Length: 350
Image (cartoon, helix red, strand yellow):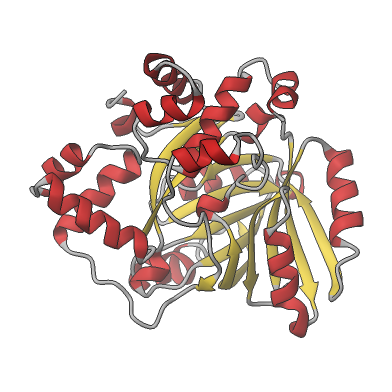
């Protein structure tokens, strides 16, 4: 598999792909541990990681799930007037509560993911600002009802087999990359001021040391370690290894909006979660009751995947395929061209 990635990209080498997989398995593992598992020198692993970050191939970041805090998440499709899309998309991408922004429909449609930390913040955007924007012709907002894959599950299946089971075992386990669960739990977590400071640092650098986290929150490394474990276990935050798809040879990204028989939504969603091409899948409200994001090497592969794999799934009644014209933001990370852009605070830590 690593050789295939090598052919697709002049930037990503086979050893780079193995490092990316190691980070997926244990995103906060020390470089020494990763080097030991990969059979490389620690200095070589450190240099590769820094190069991949500098070139915008990967970014490790702590991503907060507002659902764990009792807040719903929404997917929003905006149909805009010609010429207005870039400015609206840029304004959305600058918002902390908008984690994903993509342009489609030949540049006339914006799809974004709203992950507001408070109800007031969400209502201000969806109920006030966007409806009053003259350039917005139409708005369709769907609540995320059940997520089947996403977060640390991103590209998990696509890179499966890059390392041997023994190598992955050497890295230890930081839990399942993603396990299906209710979007909003019945017992939401209440964050402390110290939690917020820790999460701010993790958002900039998911591999920030316990010393750095403790300095930000005015806590000892031991207390930080215990609190971080709780936040990870309760899914308040997950440490995500965000990848620039084109760097691994995936040049065709598409948003899939499916109409699925209500009795089949769970089975279709769970089947999609096992597909290497699917980076995100969730049941949503609205006429299209299941949404997914697919990454394929080219449009021909996208056609084969959607017609053969998804089209044959029992319960799928119809599907809209919306190729992404331009990705503006993904998982809270800005995108420039086909590369990730780290925030200034993260660049300062390199």
